[in-house]
Length: 522
Image (tube, rainbow, N blue to C red; front, side, top):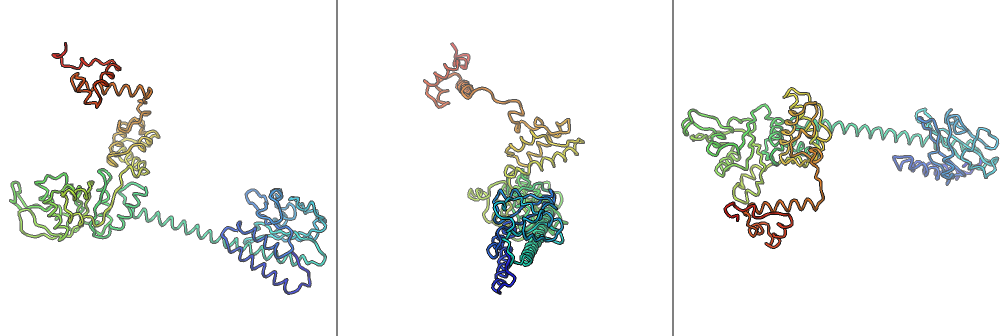
């Protein structure tokens, strides 16, 4: 570790090489714990260090432990536990001042808790310990053992170790600042992400699942434009809510939003409803009437169940989409409108095109910006949020104070496949709120379709064999009833031979004649 006083210049260069190596080591990793061992090895390689340690102070436990060591076994490292002020290392950390012990055998403060010097002559061992400070706070110490020689300057060892300790402290400071900056940026990004999600998540839609986040992103992307949107999804998933979100987040938000359910309007009146009519255009047309497209001028029109339009209406709608113009029923005057079209369907339009019931050109006019709304079974993480929303909604509507949903009821809702999607969930919760009499939605308040065997106390009992026998007997009896006691006909119905039928009748003690008409019994 130390060098002689009248040292040649090459040894100075060796110290510079050591400091250069250490600087490179400290730059290699953000976690200095990975590199301290390499620092101590470099010191040992370039100097006469026999043993070296880096100790750290734990502020919570007020205990000083060896973080990394060179020349010590794991057991020896474990033995070295100090308190501030205890031993040479404890005093250095407590006072923040370096200490040089020429011969540890002559220093009563040196405790040798590791036991590493027990097999060596202690009068031949020198010990140098320097504090590691970060912004005037002592966080640990760097120490080294070397063989004592009269010709060696321990002050030069102290100077070198102090430089290395400052390099370690500087590296720790830089890492701390980098980590703090990284954490700050992460927190900032999280806040921005949350703000963006809240900003672009429509207020009228409940759900934070990944599938719904994708829907929100699409809504945000298309809302500000005038692009035609086709919303696809099963019945009850909330397609109308998405259409509303698009309109009310668009530049047309202050203009009309007109809704049309194409499946609910009879074929005889749908043309008049969409495009309006002139007085006397047909029986009952006692005055001029504006259609939905005309009413939506400047705003948006939502055409729900677009897949149910008749071929004739598809042609007229295609013209409106292309030209943004139409004529009222009974008129030849062309009316131009500035309308954004948002359509929705729960049907497979591609299949309808193959069957020839939906026009291909209309499909491509509508399918400019498709949005697929996932069914509830594919976003089960949203079920509880939706259920809580509906509980609050219908509690207020019915003057109740239902405060929570029981765990069994939650389990039942999470296990159910929800073929009716959000609409079915809303109906279930409305019913449950009405039935609740203790401010809690319980499992027995949910419809029978959601009931589990445990909740309804109908757990199946009996063995598999007895259950199959019961089912078999029921099927045989049902077949005999339908065949009016004719065993041959019943056997054909069940897909078995007459011989097997006879064996089954005998096995279950069934009287086939009991199912014949009374006039045929003898």
